Image (cartoon, rainbow, N blue to C red):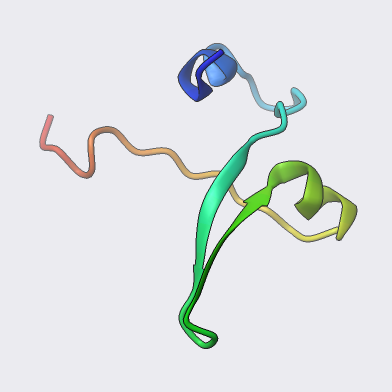
Length: 58
């Protein structure tokens, strides 16, 4: 299942499925990965922001 398929139809208040994403820490010059499940375990605030096609004009 692709990420796009996982998030299709989510509404405010619904549980977000687990996903993994690439990260970069500029202070440490470190590339890595982190999962949504890991952020929840660490009790970190998470903001999910989606935008269409890298700011393509519509």
